[in-house]
Image 1 (tube, rainbow, N blue to C red):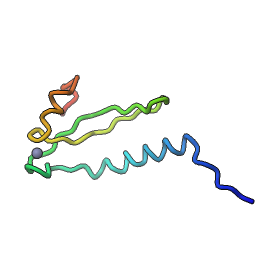
Image 2: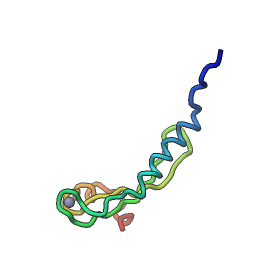
Image 3: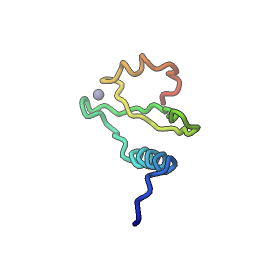
Length: 79
Ligand SMILES: [Zn+2]
């Protein structure tokens, strides 16, 4: 009798990376709320308990998401 092997840790990690990679091209260019051009923060994701990390650009609106700017420890990463 065959059993389906559980997903390995590597497969799970790859799935997460695939998800993040796929979401990258669909970045919104304009804010849904005010229509202003979106800006991007380069964030480095580090997966807890692993050595895996990668960069993802997170979109934000300079008008609606001002608190993100204020909370950023390194504003020079904004571009
Ligand atoms: Zn906005």
